[in-house]
Amino acid sequence: MIRVAGLCILMVLISGIVCANDRQSAVQLGPRPYFLVEDMDQGALKTSLEKCKNGPFVKKDFSIGHRGAPMQFPEHTKESYVAAARMGAGILECDVTFTKDKQLVCRHSQCDLHTTTDILSKPRLAKKCTIPFQPAQVNKYTGKIIKPAMAKCCTSDITLREFKTLQGKMDAANPKATSVEEYMNATAGWRTDLYSSRGTLMTHAESVELFKSLEVKMTPELKSPSVKMPFGGNYTQQNYAQQLIDDYKKAGVNPKDVYPQSFNLNDVLYWVQNEPEFGRQAVALDGRYDIEGFDHRDPKTWKPNMNQLYQQNVRIIAPPMWMLLDVEKGNIIPSSYAVEAKKAGLEIITWTLERSGLLKGGGGWYYQTTQSVINNDGDMMEVLDVLAREVGILGIFSDWPATVTYYANCKNLN
Image (cartoon, rainbow, N blue to C red; front, side, top):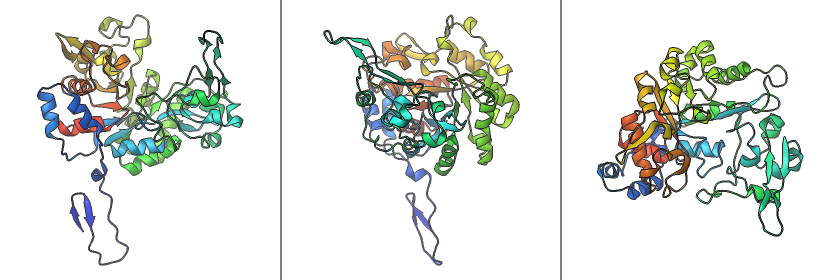
């Protein structure tokens, strides 16, 4: 067998011999990374990124598929995951929650089925929603919304069998809707419904097998339950956290290929103490920005602080990317939060690139500490460069992994 440019030429002496797939040859970046580099301001970084435009490009663990590739594919679907892997994501994420019969499935939230699936178009299942669809109340004279349309459909409202009858759709809802059809038809203009005709929902165990077949690492997030725990009287938070790890053990996955994550520090500590092989790479997602009194620039407000986290055997922390950055004299620099995390010995993963639409207005929530220097889409490459080189992150979640894969290859990152 001779390999040429990632392809196989077989000189078959015995029938039945087939050529194994070349894992790296499948990476397809498409036009977006090139568009972003072209959009950058002139400078050394743009020049260096232009030089590697011809590749070769391979999968990189630095590039993490956030829910797959949800900028254009329905999130947490087989199609979204496969697209992310094709774009070179070396790690894929299944956000994990549970059904009425306590089976683990991939969804960003326990109660997002009304915006991420077609459940509302299925009357039998829609009736089971915690809050069935309620149309918007609109003043017939002024057209102003008196009460927005709403619904709340949870995985815990239905069984696994029922869950598997659903199709994923682009995550969106129209608060002005007076019908189910209007409510579901709300995809943001900078996204697309082009790939939403098929969105195959997955159990957590199915995602594990898919990721194994795609030869990628895995980062499941244990989502906070939206129902009271213990669920059903006996399903505790610890049962839930253990069930997630058990799926990897049953599938024979090497713990080194798994980065379990949670916003609940107690989940991370549970894994550290009870499943140490998996706990070594457990990721403490940092959502303390929602806590009154927390200031990511003031270490006195961090409870626990970076050293205390390290002493509890937490080794990886994951804040949103804006918490890792500041602006000084017109330049993007690492924040005090980033400096202190690294000083304490913590590794950092961050989120989320390619989730903000057009950046000409400053980039919104994910860019809130750097908005003063963000004015075009190419600026996300500048942000990514500071996160990689100066902050020293392990990796970054992206809604379109090709962008990160391009950068990681150009800079020879893992």
